[in-house]
Length: 156
Image (tube, rainbow, N blue to C red; front, side, top):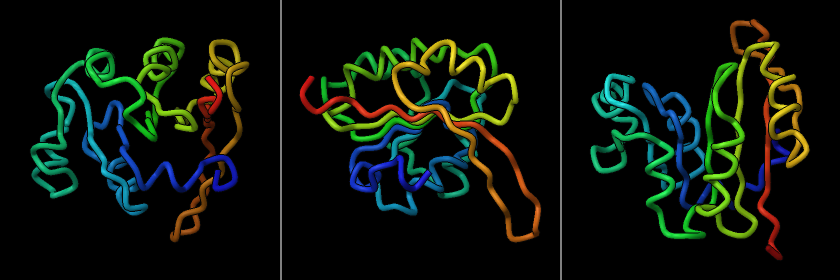
């Protein structure tokens, strides 16, 4: 997805929506961003703090949609939602992200389920780009995922 994501956005204000145990936040921090993880209680976000992936002040235990709604308009460069599942309200995340994203900011939704690609195409596909993402790990295993990437129009 290197050609689809603006690396400047990754070095800015980043929200890892549905952060869980912090796997996505860990990856995003490798790009130098100021990453805040947001997830419900008992989601594993405490593990992200205990493992040193997120500092206590960057681990927000809250409903992610309410958190986005409480942010200043156009204050975030990048919002990620890694490994979302079928049935997740993708369109709502897109709508809530609209207000929070800066002009040129981006929203990334990924998932590993085959049916998620069709769902993304149906719900938010016309608003951005849905693509297949193949990941090859050091152990030689190959994983297929799909991703949706949206870039907020700079003239909006």
